[in-house]
Length: 126
Image (cartoon, rainbow, N blue to C red; front, side, top):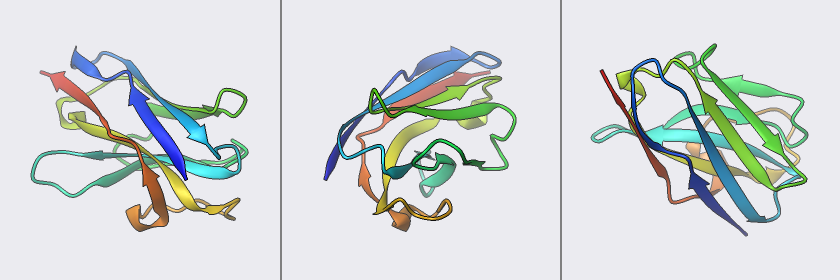
């Protein structure tokens, strides 16, 4: 089990940047970590993920080229740098830990993650 706490959300104008952080207490460095988001009335969707070593990343097409996921295993922290934000990026952002330790490859389905943070709100105004 791991406790995940997101921070860094806020209200920004379109074109601005934000960096989200996810602090983990518990097993972290051996697990793929992901960022997901959910808007009102929509299902939670995959945003980005990074494998346990940090050597591999994967992004949703909607954020590719604008968002960067990274991790610091020494600090048990996951990051999401979001540039060129758009109003459609408005959502609650969640970090999550893969259910499998040292999985080969990156999974994007929410069902593949079994530990979730409480979320942080990101609002982008036009």
